[in-house]
Image 1: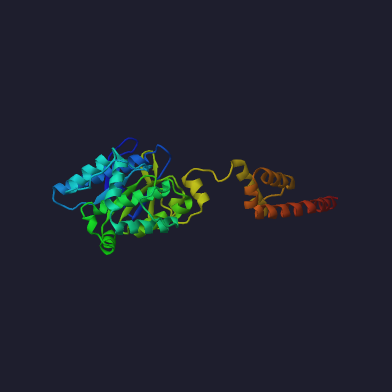
Image 2 (image 1 turned 135 degrees about the vertical axis):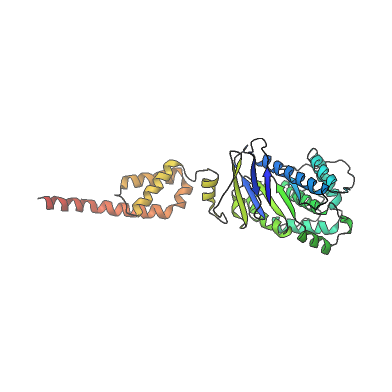
Length: 336
């Protein structure tokens, strides 16, 4: 699907093609991650309204904002939306009081036992724990996943009589209905262990959905194979061409997130030890000893990490230092 994004805030006018089931957007703070999701949400709503007016069936999409954990205590009415127009208007209104929207979803959807079982099973698979009562207050991470799941389920069932759904009919609906799901900072409140399996779990549960996610997590960029990764830079989406699936996280930090793996002086020192091992320059045992002392005292983690390189460089340096007098003696004899 090709979407035309209008100029919005820091985001430039551009086209965005959804090529894979998962698209992940990353970038620095204030680069426009949230802005671009809101712009895409508006594009989807406009297209859906146009198709509704023309009597056509359009693609449904839902935008799930970040950091929405508080649930309203207000009493809610049943969600009764007659058509796509009411669905679109309700979505816009929900952003004004999102906590009330979440309360409505819980009251509306969790009344169904099949939906409750489905979410409990998802929590068990993602977090490795059983929650007996889904209405209880859980950790922010679990609550966030519950709310994401409820939003997706609602987008799939808003025009369905939820009370009549059985396990069979509910799972059939989930497998067949495609929704475009935009989630802002999906890793919010989640331990990295949970982040590592989150996208695969969601694709298992919502196999027909397509996800557009924003993140600050390098880990999320490496744990789903069939995805497109984009950096938001100067208001534009720049596709990362290389595959990041299970890429070394140090490379992700340094190349994609501009976080140096090592301090500049330590990088130079370790590179020197490498050249000693490769015999590409004369060894300086005093410099080697200085580097080893610096690492051992000031960077014990790096000392352990590069221990093999350090040991080899020391051995070569000491060996070369021992034979240097003999070389000098031979040189004197030859000159005489």
